[in-house]
Length: 483
Image (cartoon, rainbow, N blue to C red; front, side, top):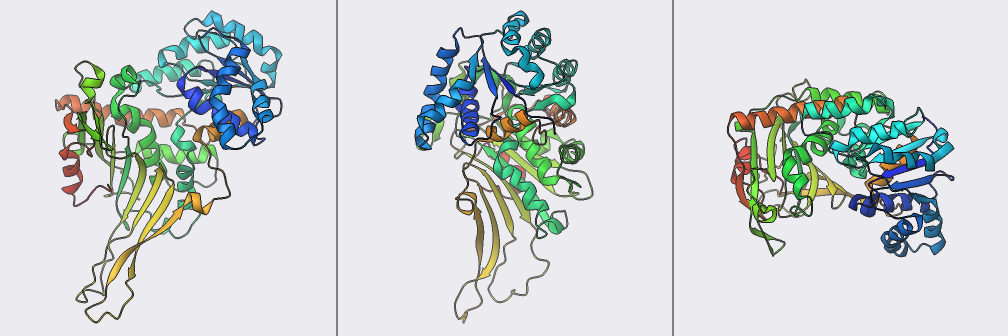
């Protein structure tokens, strides 16, 4: 692993992501003594301010965290002293010269860059970084999504990045990979002999992956209407989850080994029949959490054919998963916020309890990623009693609540892990170019199918689980969504 970077550049430092996630994550790492002692943070954005002005903004965002964790004021002051602010406009490469001058000779001690800008600004920003002397062999670059709108635009962005930053120094972010439960999926599968022998088409009937949101546009109007749910959620987060569920066991816990196995899965995804194996929807006015909410078009203020809900039935065409459907769904204005993976096992081949009044239910493993991190395995158990009228069995959940099991460990923001890995040059939880492009190939084929079949979003009232067709997508296979 390379030496930790001694300088971190934060682009878009005055934005919402920085205020809610990046600054709190860096502050949390610093409070725990995990940042390099001499690390300097250079924040940059178009806003004209100075060190003192930006530090005051950061202080406002971080004081609630300081109070919640009962930290001394000097912990916050120490962190703020790391931060310097240099105004720059990513659309004007020449303005990045000031950033290069501010970093100065520190560039030789390792620079990590977190680039959170519009994709259209990636190329001029990278050109500006190169001109400012901030793209040398000791510099690594992290890119926040979206990385294009399709395979062609993604390749264009990746080519522009690769011209200056080789793959070994390019870190593509998918913040889901920083979540503890997502990482725990690898430990669950490959650290326990209990599951892996059954983790295949012999024992698993189907897999469900759900990422549901209760919110609507929330200030992301133009971005979301250009992207839609398929490209916003399925292309990155959900396909990464699918790859982690379906991948073969890597020989070692290394970035190359793990990402090699994920790519194999993504390249094994069958081109689906869009008309029969996908459903798209758009929410209308309804109620979420007993509160009335407007429809998508009312929030947007104009007509639109963008999908706010998508469900697909995917297939991984390889030996392990042949015949096992992967049902994926995501949407906005759904009844509850959750991200979960459901592994539905097959029923036992023969029930010895038939004729005794007992009904067996197949085992089910539910991996909850958010809002609560839990792993639940349902097992059949006998209900205590004399059984004079027949034996009674009941599903019993075996739960591993992460908050309870690890009550002595502080739960971290996903970006804490990702920022620390970026600073230290550890690429395992970042997405490689061939992964991104395999994901786009699958997504582009679905969108092409929608066009060929003249498919448009079906309406669903806000506060429901999407169009009725999404229910039919699974129920015609005898499967029910885990609502």
